[in-house]
Length: 290
Ligand SMILES: [Zn+2]
Image 1: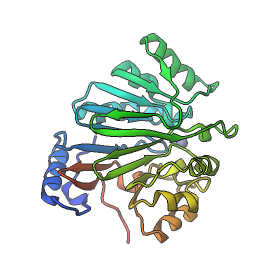
Image 2: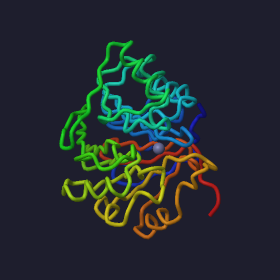
Image 3: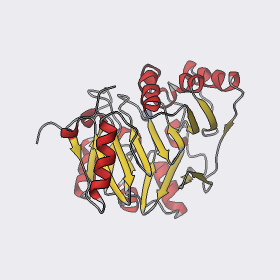
Image 4: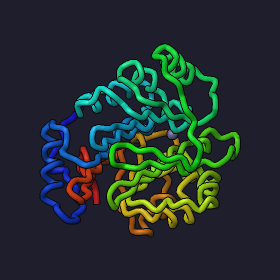
Protein backbone atom coordinates (compact mmCIF):
# COMPACT_ATOMS: atom_id res chain seq x y z
CA UNK A 1 0.00 0.00 0.00
CA UNK A 2 1.15 3.51 -0.69
CA UNK A 3 2.81 5.45 2.04
CA UNK A 4 0.76 8.32 3.26
CA UNK A 5 2.51 11.59 2.54
CA UNK A 6 2.79 14.30 5.12
CA UNK A 7 2.21 16.85 2.35
CA UNK A 8 -1.30 15.49 1.88
CA UNK A 9 -2.13 15.99 5.51
CA UNK A 10 -5.45 17.61 6.23
CA UNK A 11 -6.04 18.34 9.84
CA UNK A 12 -8.99 19.59 11.73
CA UNK A 13 -7.73 21.65 14.60
CA UNK A 14 -9.20 21.10 17.96
CA UNK A 15 -7.25 20.99 21.15
CA UNK A 16 -3.99 19.10 21.57
CA UNK A 17 -3.34 19.51 17.86
CA UNK A 18 0.32 18.59 18.04
CA UNK A 19 -0.33 15.33 19.81
CA UNK A 20 -2.79 14.32 17.11
CA UNK A 21 -0.42 15.48 14.40
CA UNK A 22 2.38 13.40 15.87
CA UNK A 23 0.11 10.35 15.84
CA UNK A 24 -0.66 10.87 12.16
CA UNK A 25 2.96 11.46 11.17
CA UNK A 26 3.85 8.16 12.81
CA UNK A 27 1.05 6.56 10.81
CA UNK A 28 2.43 7.91 7.54
CA UNK A 29 5.84 6.59 8.49
CA UNK A 30 4.40 3.10 8.66
CA UNK A 31 3.74 2.84 12.37
CA UNK A 32 0.36 2.13 13.86
CA UNK A 33 -0.91 5.50 15.08
CA UNK A 34 -0.89 6.24 18.78
CA UNK A 35 -4.61 6.77 18.65
CA UNK A 36 -7.35 6.40 21.22
CA UNK A 37 -9.63 5.62 18.30
CA UNK A 38 -9.04 5.42 14.56
CA UNK A 39 -11.55 4.96 11.78
CA UNK A 40 -10.06 4.17 8.37
CA UNK A 41 -12.21 4.44 5.28
CA UNK A 42 -10.12 2.17 3.05
CA UNK A 43 -10.04 3.03 -0.64
CA UNK A 44 -11.53 -0.13 -2.16
CA UNK A 45 -12.75 1.54 -5.36
CA UNK A 46 -16.52 1.23 -5.77
CA UNK A 47 -17.46 -0.31 -2.42
CA UNK A 48 -17.18 0.11 1.32
CA UNK A 49 -14.62 -1.08 3.85
CA UNK A 50 -14.09 0.67 7.17
CA UNK A 51 -11.57 -0.48 9.77
CA UNK A 52 -12.12 0.79 13.32
CA UNK A 53 -9.52 0.44 16.07
CA UNK A 54 -10.54 1.33 19.63
CA UNK A 55 -7.75 0.56 22.08
CA UNK A 56 -6.89 -3.04 21.21
CA UNK A 57 -10.34 -3.84 19.87
CA UNK A 58 -11.10 -3.92 16.16
CA UNK A 59 -14.15 -3.78 13.94
CA UNK A 60 -14.32 -4.14 10.18
CA UNK A 61 -17.47 -2.82 8.54
CA UNK A 62 -17.69 -4.35 5.04
CA UNK A 63 -14.85 -5.68 2.91
CA UNK A 64 -15.27 -4.20 -0.56
CA UNK A 65 -15.33 -6.44 -3.65
CA UNK A 66 -13.34 -9.67 -3.59
CA UNK A 67 -10.59 -8.20 -5.78
CA UNK A 68 -9.98 -5.64 -3.01
CA UNK A 69 -9.55 -8.24 -0.25
CA UNK A 70 -5.75 -8.27 -0.47
CA UNK A 71 -5.66 -4.50 0.01
CA UNK A 72 -7.93 -4.70 3.06
CA UNK A 73 -5.90 -7.57 4.53
CA UNK A 74 -2.65 -5.66 4.01
CA UNK A 75 -4.11 -2.56 5.61
CA UNK A 76 -5.18 -4.44 8.75
CA UNK A 77 -1.92 -6.38 9.02
CA UNK A 78 0.09 -3.20 8.61
CA UNK A 79 -1.71 -1.98 11.68
CA UNK A 80 -0.39 -5.05 13.46
CA UNK A 81 -3.71 -6.82 13.97
CA UNK A 82 -4.45 -10.49 13.34
CA UNK A 83 -7.90 -10.46 14.93
CA UNK A 84 -11.15 -8.70 14.04
CA UNK A 85 -13.40 -8.59 17.10
CA UNK A 86 -16.50 -7.53 15.19
CA UNK A 87 -16.93 -8.18 11.47
CA UNK A 88 -19.97 -6.47 9.98
CA UNK A 89 -21.46 -7.20 6.57
CA UNK A 90 -23.93 -4.34 6.27
CA UNK A 91 -25.86 -6.12 3.50
CA UNK A 92 -25.13 -8.92 1.03
CA UNK A 93 -24.04 -6.96 -2.07
CA UNK A 94 -20.62 -7.87 -3.46
CA UNK A 95 -19.20 -4.35 -3.06
CA UNK A 96 -19.73 -4.83 0.71
CA UNK A 97 -19.14 -8.53 1.38
CA UNK A 98 -17.17 -9.61 -1.71
CA UNK A 99 -13.99 -10.03 0.33
CA UNK A 100 -15.64 -11.48 3.41
CA UNK A 101 -14.58 -15.10 2.76
CA UNK A 102 -10.93 -14.07 2.32
CA UNK A 103 -11.07 -11.92 5.46
CA UNK A 104 -12.61 -14.75 7.51
CA UNK A 105 -10.05 -17.24 6.24
CA UNK A 106 -7.20 -14.85 7.08
CA UNK A 107 -8.05 -13.40 10.51
CA UNK A 108 -9.22 -14.63 13.86
CA UNK A 109 -12.81 -13.42 14.06
CA UNK A 110 -14.80 -12.58 17.19
CA UNK A 111 -18.38 -12.12 16.07
CA UNK A 112 -20.03 -11.57 12.71
CA UNK A 113 -23.01 -9.27 12.33
CA UNK A 114 -25.18 -9.30 9.22
CA UNK A 115 -28.83 -8.51 8.53
CA UNK A 116 -31.32 -11.36 8.43
CA UNK A 117 -31.52 -11.68 4.66
CA UNK A 118 -30.23 -14.17 2.12
CA UNK A 119 -28.86 -13.45 -1.33
CA UNK A 120 -28.60 -16.09 -4.00
CA UNK A 121 -25.15 -15.26 -5.33
CA UNK A 122 -21.76 -16.91 -5.42
CA UNK A 123 -20.40 -14.04 -3.29
CA UNK A 124 -22.93 -14.64 -0.52
CA UNK A 125 -22.45 -18.41 -0.65
CA UNK A 126 -18.66 -18.01 -0.47
CA UNK A 127 -19.07 -15.90 2.67
CA UNK A 128 -21.38 -18.50 4.24
CA UNK A 129 -19.00 -21.34 3.33
CA UNK A 130 -16.11 -19.53 5.02
CA UNK A 131 -18.25 -18.88 8.10
CA UNK A 132 -19.22 -22.56 8.38
CA UNK A 133 -15.70 -23.82 7.64
CA UNK A 134 -14.32 -21.65 10.45
CA UNK A 135 -17.00 -22.73 12.95
CA UNK A 136 -18.36 -19.21 13.19
CA UNK A 137 -21.94 -18.05 13.44
CA UNK A 138 -23.72 -14.95 12.23
CA UNK A 139 -25.87 -12.78 14.42
CA UNK A 140 -28.47 -10.35 13.12
CA UNK A 141 -28.65 -7.56 15.68
CA UNK A 142 -31.89 -5.71 16.29
CA UNK A 143 -32.19 -1.93 16.23
CA UNK A 144 -31.42 -0.60 19.68
CA UNK A 145 -28.72 -3.19 20.47
CA UNK A 146 -25.61 -1.70 22.00
CA UNK A 147 -22.17 -3.22 22.20
CA UNK A 148 -18.76 -2.07 23.33
CA UNK A 149 -15.68 -1.80 21.17
CA UNK A 150 -12.89 -1.02 23.60
CA UNK A 151 -13.89 2.29 25.17
CA UNK A 152 -16.22 3.11 22.28
CA UNK A 153 -19.93 2.33 22.19
CA UNK A 154 -21.68 1.08 19.07
CA UNK A 155 -25.45 1.29 18.72
CA UNK A 156 -27.50 -0.38 16.01
CA UNK A 157 -29.79 2.46 14.91
CA UNK A 158 -31.62 0.62 12.14
CA UNK A 159 -33.40 -0.89 10.39
CA UNK A 160 -36.35 -1.41 12.74
CA UNK A 161 -38.34 -3.55 10.35
CA UNK A 162 -38.24 -5.11 6.92
CA UNK A 163 -38.78 -2.13 4.65
CA UNK A 164 -38.93 -3.39 1.07
CA UNK A 165 -37.26 -5.84 -1.29
CA UNK A 166 -34.22 -3.64 -1.74
CA UNK A 167 -31.20 -5.28 -0.12
CA UNK A 168 -29.83 -1.78 0.43
CA UNK A 169 -32.62 -1.15 2.92
CA UNK A 170 -31.53 -4.14 4.99
CA UNK A 171 -28.26 -2.28 5.65
CA UNK A 172 -27.22 -2.38 9.30
CA UNK A 173 -26.81 1.26 10.30
CA UNK A 174 -24.40 1.76 13.21
CA UNK A 175 -23.56 4.79 15.32
CA UNK A 176 -20.27 4.75 17.19
CA UNK A 177 -19.60 7.18 20.01
CA UNK A 178 -16.27 7.86 21.65
CA UNK A 179 -15.33 10.78 23.87
CA UNK A 180 -17.32 13.72 22.48
CA UNK A 181 -17.23 12.36 18.92
CA UNK A 182 -19.58 10.16 16.95
CA UNK A 183 -19.63 8.36 13.62
CA UNK A 184 -22.64 7.17 11.63
CA UNK A 185 -22.06 4.18 9.32
CA UNK A 186 -24.96 3.85 6.92
CA UNK A 187 -24.08 1.07 4.48
CA UNK A 188 -26.24 1.58 1.40
CA UNK A 189 -29.31 2.80 3.33
CA UNK A 190 -31.77 4.54 1.02
CA UNK A 191 -34.46 7.12 1.78
CA UNK A 192 -36.95 4.53 3.07
CA UNK A 193 -34.49 3.24 5.67
CA UNK A 194 -33.51 6.80 6.55
CA UNK A 195 -37.21 7.50 7.18
CA UNK A 196 -37.47 4.34 9.33
CA UNK A 197 -34.58 5.60 11.47
CA UNK A 198 -35.96 9.15 11.69
CA UNK A 199 -39.36 7.80 12.78
CA UNK A 200 -37.68 5.90 15.62
CA UNK A 201 -36.36 9.21 17.03
CA UNK A 202 -33.06 7.53 17.93
CA UNK A 203 -30.15 9.96 18.25
CA UNK A 204 -28.16 9.91 15.00
CA UNK A 205 -26.38 13.27 15.31
CA UNK A 206 -22.78 12.54 14.40
CA UNK A 207 -19.48 14.30 13.89
CA UNK A 208 -18.64 12.11 10.90
CA UNK A 209 -21.15 10.67 8.41
CA UNK A 210 -20.25 7.79 6.13
CA UNK A 211 -22.50 8.93 3.30
CA UNK A 212 -25.08 6.29 2.36
CA UNK A 213 -24.90 4.27 -0.86
CA UNK A 214 -21.71 5.84 -2.23
CA UNK A 215 -23.34 9.27 -2.53
CA UNK A 216 -26.22 8.00 -4.68
CA UNK A 217 -29.27 10.25 -4.90
CA UNK A 218 -31.28 7.36 -3.42
CA UNK A 219 -29.79 8.38 -0.06
CA UNK A 220 -28.81 11.27 2.22
CA UNK A 221 -32.18 13.01 2.13
CA UNK A 222 -32.48 16.54 3.51
CA UNK A 223 -34.29 15.52 6.71
CA UNK A 224 -31.82 12.72 7.41
CA UNK A 225 -28.82 14.97 6.82
CA UNK A 226 -30.33 17.60 9.12
CA UNK A 227 -30.76 15.01 11.87
CA UNK A 228 -27.20 13.74 11.51
CA UNK A 229 -25.84 17.28 11.21
CA UNK A 230 -22.27 16.11 10.51
CA UNK A 231 -19.15 18.25 10.37
CA UNK A 232 -17.39 15.77 8.11
CA UNK A 233 -18.74 13.44 5.41
CA UNK A 234 -16.85 10.54 3.84
CA UNK A 235 -18.00 9.08 0.53
CA UNK A 236 -16.61 5.67 -0.38
CA UNK A 237 -16.80 5.59 -4.15
CA UNK A 238 -14.81 4.33 -7.16
CA UNK A 239 -13.22 6.59 -9.76
CA UNK A 240 -15.28 6.67 -12.98
CA UNK A 241 -17.90 4.27 -11.60
CA UNK A 242 -20.77 3.41 -13.94
CA UNK A 243 -23.46 4.58 -11.50
CA UNK A 244 -22.56 8.27 -11.57
CA UNK A 245 -21.82 8.21 -7.83
CA UNK A 246 -21.60 10.51 -6.03
CA UNK A 247 -24.65 12.40 -7.24
CA UNK A 248 -24.44 16.17 -7.65
CA UNK A 249 -27.64 16.72 -5.68
CA UNK A 250 -26.13 14.92 -2.68
CA UNK A 251 -22.81 16.76 -2.99
CA UNK A 252 -24.61 20.10 -3.17
CA UNK A 253 -26.78 19.20 -0.18
CA UNK A 254 -23.66 18.42 1.86
CA UNK A 255 -21.91 21.60 0.70
CA UNK A 256 -24.95 23.75 1.47
CA UNK A 257 -24.93 22.32 5.00
CA UNK A 258 -21.28 23.37 5.37
CA UNK A 259 -20.04 19.77 5.64
CA UNK A 260 -16.39 19.04 4.87
CA UNK A 261 -16.39 16.27 2.22
CA UNK A 262 -13.80 13.53 1.75
CA UNK A 263 -14.05 11.02 -1.12
CA UNK A 264 -12.03 7.87 -1.56
CA UNK A 265 -12.00 8.37 -5.37
CA UNK A 266 -10.23 11.70 -4.85
CA UNK A 267 -8.44 11.38 -1.49
CA UNK A 268 -7.69 7.64 -1.46
CA UNK A 269 -7.93 6.11 1.99
CA UNK A 270 -9.29 8.56 4.57
CA UNK A 271 -8.33 8.10 8.22
CA UNK A 272 -9.99 9.78 11.20
CA UNK A 273 -7.87 9.67 14.34
CA UNK A 274 -8.91 10.71 17.82
CA UNK A 275 -5.97 11.20 20.12
CA UNK A 276 -5.78 13.19 23.31
CA UNK A 277 -9.23 14.66 22.76
CA UNK A 278 -8.48 15.90 19.22
CA UNK A 279 -9.98 14.63 15.97
CA UNK A 280 -7.74 14.75 12.90
CA UNK A 281 -8.40 13.63 9.35
CA UNK A 282 -5.58 12.32 7.18
CA UNK A 283 -5.87 11.45 3.52
CA UNK A 284 -3.72 9.22 1.35
CA UNK A 285 -3.72 11.68 -1.53
CA UNK A 286 -4.01 15.43 -1.69
CA UNK A 287 -7.17 16.61 -3.47
CA UNK A 288 -6.60 17.95 -6.98
CA UNK A 289 -8.31 20.95 -8.51
CA UNK A 290 -9.88 23.97 -6.86
ZN1 LIG B 1 -22.72 -0.48 -2.10
